[in-house]
Image (cartoon, rainbow, N blue to C red; front, side, top):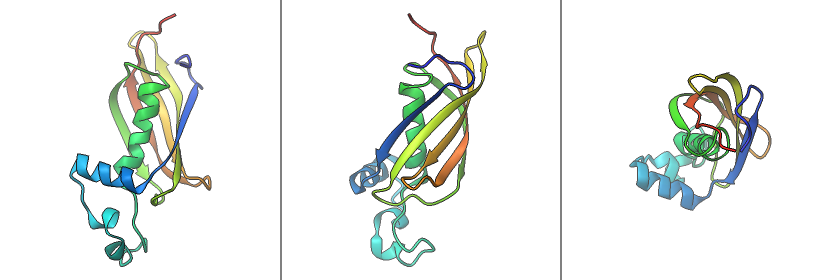
Length: 136
């Protein structure tokens, strides 16, 4: 686990499958046809199905909770700006970078960004978290 300090970065990459989309729809209750019905999705501005924005955003949570700051991290806030659609079978890389850290309160601010396999930014924002105490 990287040390929580300004400039520290961590990333995770995942290909989002149809099974992921359907499991997320079931878990969240978001059964919007633009995510699940190819025929309907063809009639939208995207021309095909898109991945739930919050499924994409959840990849950021995986980085924060497992890699940086790591296990025990507590979310305080997250801003999200959706920049481009994510499609089934896109490979998304979620990256976080510490931009500020208040050691006394263990509060970290991180730039959050998701890119697709072509390097296109699909989501960006900022997270504020309580970082776990470092262990040696």
